[in-house]
Amino acid sequence: MGRRRTLIMQVPCRRRGEKESEEPLRIMAIDYGDAHTGIAVSDATGFLAGYTTTINSRKAEVVLEELVRLVREHGVEELVMGYPKNMDGTEGPRAELYRTFAQQVEEKTGLKPVLWDERRTTVDAHRILFEAGKNAKKRKKTVDAVAATLILEGYLDFKRIQKN
Image (spheres, rainbow, N blue to C red):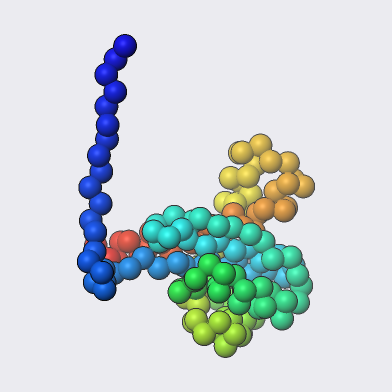
């Protein structure tokens, strides 16, 4: 029989009452849509997408109420919202609708969403689900949450780069 090895990790500890210089934030990404709004929330470390869901409603009021609940439930401190741009970088006709919705989100949650370029996120989400073997019906149920995860991952990468 071989010898067992024990792995010991050193974890920096804080003294009682001492604050870490930069606490990780829970960040929520929103992929707002006409009938389905994808949601992704970072994990406690602020480095990965942890929780995903889809809000299925065509009514902005219902989506807003659910966003408020999710912000409270997950202790979200920062919002990032997909923002539609044309492939050439100009704002499309839906941009004003999204800006208006972002203002409503800020009014309801007290958090101002960062508007994040969402070009290709839905296309990439469909590709990811297709490559994972999901049929069209199953893709339709989860594509918005996957798109929100892609928005969140892009934003988290951006924040890490800015930090260094």
